[in-house]
Image (cartoon, rainbow, N blue to C red; front, side, top):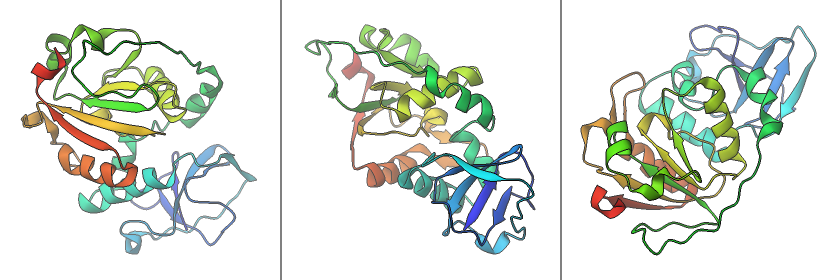
Length: 241
């Protein structure tokens, strides 16, 4: 199996090989001051890994299924398809400040709302998670309806503080938010029961990430649809007014 270190640099990509088989793929492991993510046995570009994991401190699983199987599959695909590294891709999936993220785990509280959708022309499911992808923040501020500005809608911003991003991540993983609005850089979330994803103005150039890893959001969404088996619905802004 292979382990990703959030603290140490292993060769070029923070990835170690290991002969230990006591952990399951997706588990988060603590070894001394370091935290390790079990990437499983089938990673992208295993021929590049040269460093063997040799524990020099007691180790334990601190979070089982920190990444579920589908989330890991999407991670591996992003690295392979874009010929990138786990170090570059994982930053879109999770903060590297694991102790702070775990410390906020118990602070997530559930909020429930009874809603009326009669005046909203989009298909939403109150019992599941619904993702709305927008091309840019200008669309968020100027073109989304008043419905999406209400307090039960979770907005993900790339400019959010890390504390805020960690809070949103935990809420999404535990299904404590159900309408999520995000730009392309913030869609890599640990969805628990994703039901539908809606593209707003899907033809705009903002859906092409120009940094490493370079990716087109429509291709990522196709893979997510395959993994989570949800509906993909392209929308113009006129449907959100």
